[in-house]
Length: 498
Image (cartoon, rainbow, N blue to C red; front, side, top):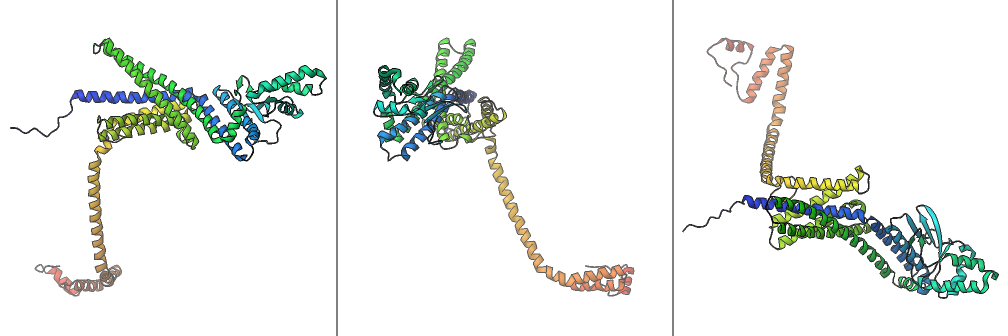
């Protein structure tokens, strides 16, 4: 009986083709998710500005209320009315994409007659005085003061009708005979229950809402922030789903149409696959776009918005979505640990390249969104190519990892050579220490004298020094003076033995 072979069967060409197709589809899905996030970022830009404004204005609301925490809420609600209306107006103006902006004067000029200034860019187009009293007569009397002439008179939304009726009754009863007719008439002409300018309105605030903000400033701020975030994220999700679904549907329709024309699929299969691709693209596009806005909002809160740029949140959200899919496949046993690490590392590298190439593109092409989009797409494509070629990334496909063992062997040989060189160097140092002093004390003087006699032509003395060098080395030369040297040189039978 023959034992089964333990050698693994090499992957077939069909298996390799299927893996390559899956990899291309995965990169296509990830790329469509990035494009969906970029498109959503531009589409919700007004909402993003509105969200930033809400966070800023709600923080001012919280500060003013907590600073005056000891003031009775029934009194402090008047101040809260100003800041609530500013917040709502700025949110509406930002969502409409206008340059209008409202600001309370409490921090900039606390002694100003106007409580709120509405500006168009740098120009003040309207001054507003806000009052919230328990009795309509008290509100009308205060609003009629001369210093408020020509200003809008802002009152709580639920007190507007009562004050308006009071002013109408007064005019009907006293008419032009009243000395306060002009002042109260100005109040009636400018009375409003909301901040408004150039078609933009805040929507108004009731006295109850103002008192709630004074009693629960944190909850009120969270309420406005949450609503702004949900609106921005929800709209981004819708845009991302439309873009992602459209891209995936179009790509799938083209690919499946080619298969249909070549007879590789039926019409029913083509329709089903295209619908599935569209739904998958919409899911990914919506999730990535919504996630990118959440990341952008969080980054702005912690001061990292400049580090990530416009494209960074989308790239990070896209990488997180891809990491989630890889984790799901790994948990189900569809991929091994090495492939899992490779996919996570690839997603992170593509996201990093997209982020910083997007920032570079924005600097090189100073056109909003266009420069960042071009840079991000270029960075993504470059990173994907480098990963697929094995230059970057983790796993067996990395050509750097393939040469790792060879590099380690070279490092081991170099380390051994360094140790051998250190040993030889030490031996030379030991020899120098053992014989160097004797050489310097004995031979150096003799050599110096020999050189000196040679240079001065004293050959007899030079020969004497040469004889002494031989004796020092333990070998006697066969002559001791110049005559013996001449005789030695003339005798052919004699040999010099060293």
